[in-house]
Amino acid sequence: MDKSSLSTTPSSERGPPSVSKPPGHVGARNSDASPGLGDCLAVNAEDSQRREQQHRRDATYARLAADVQQSSSHKRQRDETEESGPSRILGVYGNQSGEHAVDVSATGGLSGLAPVEAPVKPTKRPKVEQLTSQRTVPVIVFPDLPPGAEDNNRWLGVFVPTLLKFLGSRQDPYYWKDDYSVLTVQAIWDVVYAGRIEWTVCCSDLVHTKATKAVLEWRDRIRKAGVIAFDAYFKSARLDFPTNGRREDYCSAIMHEGRLFYAVPDEMQGLYRSRFVLAPLQRHLKMIKGAKDVPTIMSKTGYDHPYAAIGLAAAAAYWAAALWRYGKVSYDKRGTPVIVKTIYEITGKDTREEIAFRSVNFRRTAMGCTASACKLAPKRNSLPYGAVEELANDDFALLVDMED
Image (cartoon, rainbow, N blue to C red):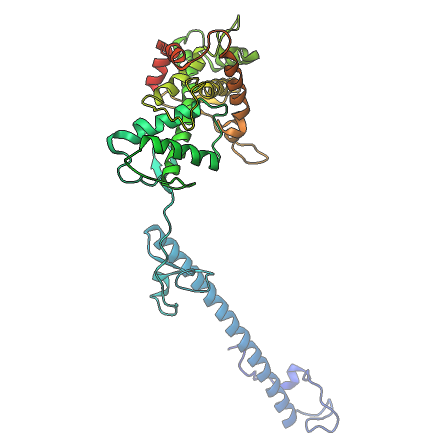
């Protein structure tokens, strides 16, 4: 029998009612007297009150259970439909409260929602897509250049080489602040596209964004050449470097006092003519072929001296040697050198961030090498562009350049 139904057990067996009644009440009686009408009324009222409370509790529990079941059902449907890519209406568009995302398939339609307005189209900006290779990494797709800018390979064949040649002749290969970069890109644009396309360069517009991309690729290709140079050297002398330990010992020794920068490390002769510096420098010289002169930003004295490129190439060689020295290089299935990923147990951060070839890590090294390269110009056997190109055009540098 239901708990809320009226009990048929005699009141004498249930004991006295819990609600006391004042003297003179119609139900007042002696303890030995038999139950009367007042006692029955009191018991009925008490049971009715209990039934009502129990009914409210049961109704509350039922609503809670229904809410939980409905929430779980919606979550399952949302998880299932998200895998197949259904349309979702975010609160920021359809529901002006903006607190929740509503699943159309879960609600059975658009009833109950505010009118859905078309979202405002976003402005043009670099788009991130996924490139699937050995691992999935985000790839930035930059906006197109103005119409006609890429005709006759004028952008990649003239503009980019001119920009990189200018940056390679400065004192800081990492300097690319907004005002400076805008003026530089504008000056080169006015020369390369004179009489063809007029364009006012602004920070982060499509021309400035493309130019910044070229600068980042320039540094990255020089960085890769530093790693490939050491890898090519170790592979050319496998008997001398059969294990990682031997390679680590070699890099540790050659990094001492900057000996890796010299053509003759033991005698420390031929600064910046080491194979490990010439290989990434050859990469720079290849990237600047086809460059034009820009009188407004390029002085006649020093423009043909790739001081910053030498500094960046030397920093790339030093960075690559440090990778092998500290056991941060491994090989994949194809025999390509890769940086080992290790995680700090305490911080949970990837240690590769601390050794990345970035301004925060290697700008000081690059600027120091650039400054010393500048001091070579007025002294022994200066390093004009033609001489450096001749030095870099050796078999080893060409071999490294072919492996990229």
